[in-house]
Image (cartoon, rainbow, N blue to C red; front, side):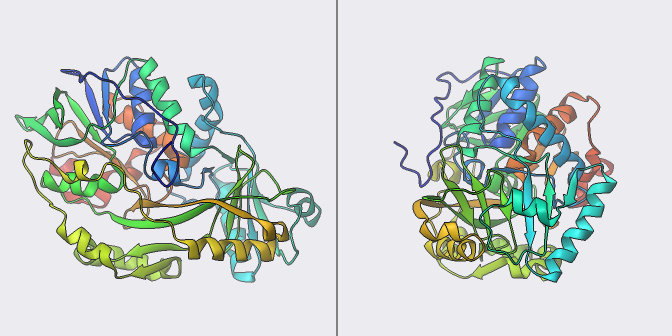
Length: 442
């Protein structure tokens, strides 16, 4: 039985460290395992190194939505491609990730939300997405048990859901079958270079020679890259979630509104959360990156609960530099497992009970929290670091990583191998946030 606040499907890592591979991936979340699968399927030798367990952090703690609707328009083509890849994933890997095409609906209870979703319907239409406003008859059919008062529902039938706690390990197993080395409990300490380009990574278990490295470390990417002298702009945001039982007669599709979200699970329960509300404990990085993140804060402050607590001192005490032969913060914290926030669960159930009375008898089975890695513009970086040939970053997914994981892994593999990309890679290039690491600076 897992000692973490949320169980993750067990995945035994490889016993032997390879001496050399073409590519080393740092991090075993959804982005790391999908990248490993893509590379292994193309015959590229790859080793994935995870400091703790596969999908132990945000990749198993998210809501499990695989949605296109409501995304930033710059990110939408990748989201659409990823959902199509999710629809083929179970067959592709010969395992169940829990993915089902259920559709997703967003409910509007006030004019402001309705106006916003009507505007987004036009964005979706421009990209050929099947997002549309439902008629009153369709609302009654697709949303049984609602308490009325719904002004409008934006529905995307092609969206779906998966089970985060089984998806990551399942994809990792498939990558290993294709030849990838998957190492758990194996923290990478640094990336070494020779003649200015990547030559090896140093892990706590030894050195792996390689020609390329992918930093897909989620919330740890900024710290890892900082030790290499690279300033990656990224902050942490905590999202509380819960699983409840005792609710019957509701739709199987994920449903969200201004202040609640729910998703039917394969085990019969529901994953619930307060939508548009996350915790943002202040850290020293908030002050270091204040100028860059402040414009985003001005438009999203309603969605964040800023707190100054003991986390500030904990973060201030974390070492930010180390040698390759020294133990690192990644070995001190194998899995970031923040405490649950019962107040958020109570608020979620209160909001849900108001809209769907069948949540009134819900029983809380488990509560947890996950830590998301956010960039200043809430768009991930999936890019080479052009000033260090062979070094790549896939991080800063801002709570979108699970849903766009397959497409992100494919894009990363395309960039490494030099194959044509399915979407515009410039959208995700590191140069938009750090011009000094861009191609023109190389």
